[in-house]
Image 1 (cartoon, one colour):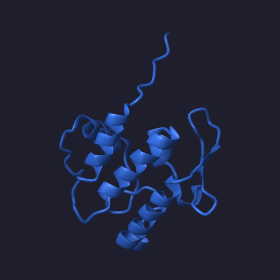
Image 2: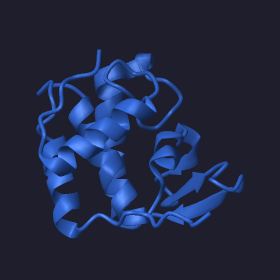
Image 3: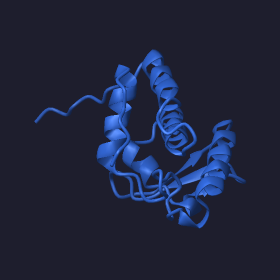
Image 4: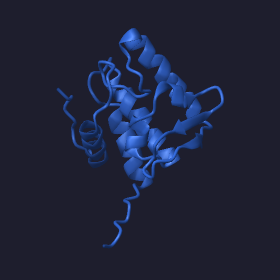
Length: 139
């Protein structure tokens, strides 16, 4: 069986996705920031969507500027250095904690009400934002 080639998003597609993520409803909610920050992290680090979604709070060391990605595709763990990205992640963490407080789950990136992100929603939002489609809020 032939291996499938990964799709590499162009700079224009990444920029369109990041811009569209900031327009997601609700205007005063966390959703837009969750998707904007997580998609940006994926773009600059090359992480898989599932790896970004699976980051726990303890995996994100903003002081040292490093992420610990656990149980990757091949069952290993790795460290991902952060440089300017650390500032964006710090802003997201402050915004998340200010909006949700104790309702936040253990994952770094959370859904609007503080729970885990669901794969089907993240993939749908990514595809829609790249294609310029309007994204309805998940139920």
